[in-house]
Length: 179
Image (cartoon, rainbow, N blue to C red; front, side):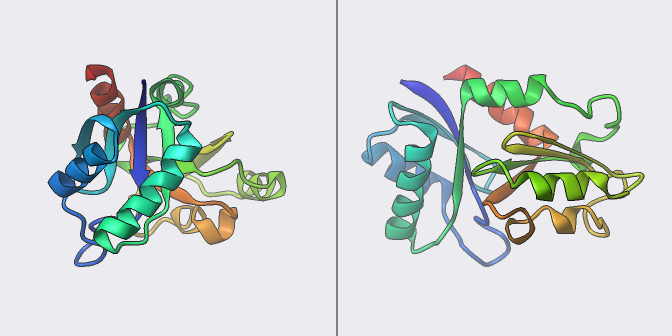
């Protein structure tokens, strides 16, 4: 069994797309996933499965829709993949506050032309780095007024994207290592 991290997009944002984490853990256990754990209330799940990350993502999308009536795109990384995300952090020197540093996890690598266009733009003092299926973004002024953050969405990138701040990323890795 492989430890995997499932990132459900758009879960429990305000009154929308409500999914109880205890009920989600129970549903995943009944579906055959092992050692299911959740972090926070925003759709961060660590579990063990024999399936590939892509297969687990599709299965979870269907399960959440069937069991909770919520349409949520899911991006999954193995424990080792998430470990690489943390290890290869290209903006480690710039980041001063992990709450303002986000990693967007993508369902696939974005079109190289979009990557070239976004990395060529000036966002200072914000910074962005694309590495395969992850986008690292430093927002020193916060997300609310960030011109960069507005460009790192599905429509612009052409793939499913779900972002987590650095604190959450490292906590998910620690949680995956516990199991």
